[in-house]
Amino acid sequence: MTTTRTLYLIACAAPPSRRLEIPVRAAQRAGWDVCLILTPSAYRWASEDAVGVIETLTELTGHPIRHQYKLPSQDDVLPAPDALLVAPLTANTLNKWAAGISDTLALGLITEGIGLQLPIVALPHWNDAQHAHPAVARSVETLRAAGVTVLLGDGGFVPHKPRHGYLDAYPWQAAVDALP
Image (cartoon, rainbow, N blue to C red; front, side, top):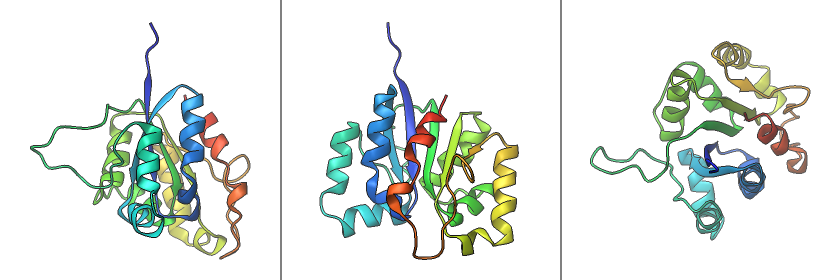
């Protein structure tokens, strides 16, 4: 009997979030049942700025796309995760996550994921000006010390000059390959 593993792909509002079908398909090929959780801004991008994206991703994953906390009286609509992939991870979410802030569903899941000792891979996306802020290095160090695999630098994401990101170079496959 084959046991299906469940992956929560948690995406922030950064340009690679416009190509979420790439990591969803890659993770599915690797044997994961993928559930997609978006930050509120990423959900807005997908639902207001691009027609049909939410519907397409829902069909691709076979699960509803979540972006906000459910009410206490509501049932969970997603299976429990076996691992988390946070990609693209923005500097904003990185810094909130490292500080333990969970004011969105996405942040709540990843802050809790550390305490649950779930395998967590994070693939950043920010420019080199944001990367130069001292909070970023501290936050990356904090998350790595907590057991999060942060794919930043060689073999992962390398920050680019502002407004000069190249989406085709975003290393989705490296993130999927880093999952257990």
